[in-house]
Amino acid sequence: MPTTRVPINSSADILAARQMGRSLARQIGFSSPTDLTLIATAISELARNIVHYAKQGEVVLDSVQHNGKCGIAIVAKDKGPGISNISQVMQAGYSTSGGLGLGLPGVQRLMDEFAIVSNIGKGTTVTAIKWVSQHE
Image 1 (tube, rainbow, N blue to C red):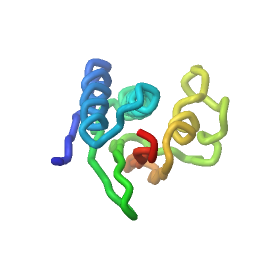
Image 2: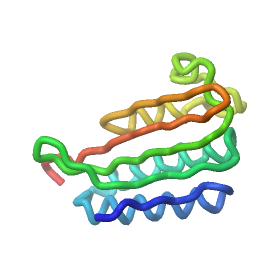
Image 3: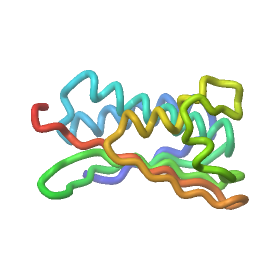
Image 4: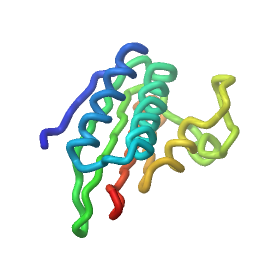
């Protein structure tokens, strides 16, 4: 399946990324409404962070395989201000925007794999993977 790149420049792009991710997840083999919702929620959170903190970036959606498993990879990239203290933003309840602070820690809980790389003044890349469960 081809890689899907969704430019994120406004709130409207969040919905587009969410819909494309849900569609790709179905094609990959996710059939559980719960898993489809978790994937869409993770995409929404990551895209919302791009709009809020970096103003623009992209969400890259791709199918992945490893050790006989299939899954969806979500990579959110921006060239925003970066995150100065990753461990702090990964604490549940921490928020710089006055929100609930569920963003990145929430995405980590929803997905099977999660990684974040950020450089001050250069941007942030978050990679999250969800694997199709054996009982899908």
